[in-house]
Length: 320
Image 1 (cartoon, rainbow, N blue to C red):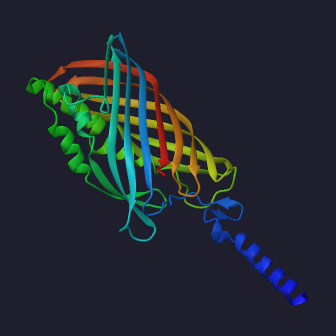
Image 2: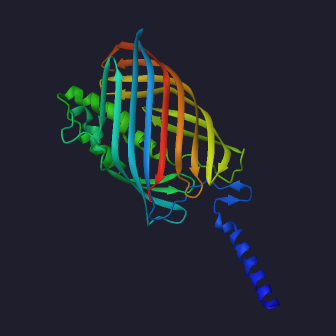
């Protein structure tokens, strides 16, 4: 009997040691947390990225309120074939929604409800549905490669079929701003750009800086803070500044030069087990000034001011 009791004690000690091993909690490093992207092959995530711009635009003293919304829903499938420390993800666009309110008009489109007859103005949006790209993403959130993005944007451009060449050119310029390679890459980066370089404890902060593209290239600098951890979910807040100086953009028959300044704040929830961003809310308050000119006639120049709020949201849900 003493031998049996001794064996039971040893077995219990072994079990307790195994249960307490840090290998069971790969995202812990003592009191700190390893905030990294670490999905498993075969996992599938439903991802939605949306952006709403509520702006007050003044052109030569005329006030033009404008509100724009765009939402894209993706399926992210984690596949085999990535080298160690990286993950191969195929993203397929499943749904596109857009809405614009300006000058008394309200134009909206939802690919899930559009049917077979797509108005010409919305064909580029509908062209995204069913398209795929394949990304290689590191555990630090860096997108190392992305295949199929050029084909995706070309698919959008090929769908443009407005009533006349001038309208085609204007539409192409607008699509380059919202669904060209740079802004589309921004949509994919939204899901992965939040990770620190090393372990962080509750109360720790880390810095990030990046050049983002949303019509204009903008410099973003932010500070993120790990506020708390509950049930394997990290709650993170962030603040930052957004600046664009003398940014130029060709818009078909006209060109635009803008100076933009703004501040951002937001919060996100990260699943420590997979590194997925369960929910992110970001609000940017900005003001800008610039000029709109016609390259064919330099004397035609308009002064434009703009101020407003841009709100972005992101959700990633593991499909069971």
